[in-house]
Length: 178
Image (spheres, rainbow, N blue to C red):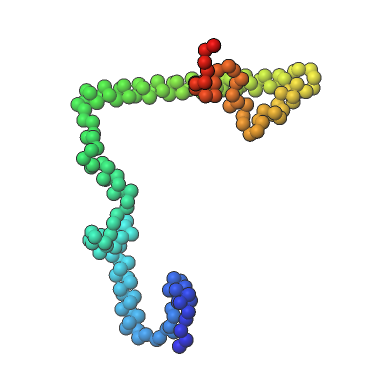
């Protein structure tokens, strides 16, 4: 038989291509191999993909790393113990927590309603400009043009105002009183 180059041999091993011609095996070897494979498959439990032998060997099988980390941090000596309340104290804690969450929800809803009101006012103003200004919507179209808003890829909101202070450097050390 002809020998293969190392490159072809490594490719054959990666893609599990047999390098020798298959020989005819006896039926007893085939039956034995089939029985071994079925035994290995039956060793896996119904809800697990790990074989029983792998579960027994603690050194060979390492569990899910996420679960290991959760257990590590839950039972770490520097982790503070969980809060333990009496019934009345727990009820007090739960009541305050629930009231705070309700208050936060009310604040959130008020803020959303205010934003919605502002958006609808802007929408109505734009619609009034578009239809009711009497110029056929020219003023509306002019107001919607965005040219010149962004110059040099910096939004105008972030531009530095032209003021006397604050200065670019914190202190002028060369200044002398005359």
